[in-house]
Length: 71
Image (cartoon, rainbow, N blue to C red; front, top):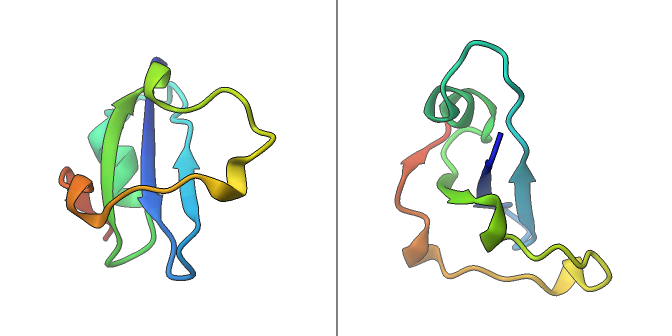
């Protein structure tokens, strides 16, 4: 799948979900797998940095998390 689901954990770190091809849409996976009450955004894989060396420094502004909220 060429999409990723990103959200901000309660500690401020960034969570990234790599959806599997399981018969659900990426939107259904996001609602199901993002922790309850946390806003998320669905992005193309190209928007997620591929270099994981500084992954603890990744940030996202809350105003960008506009695609939904985890159930």
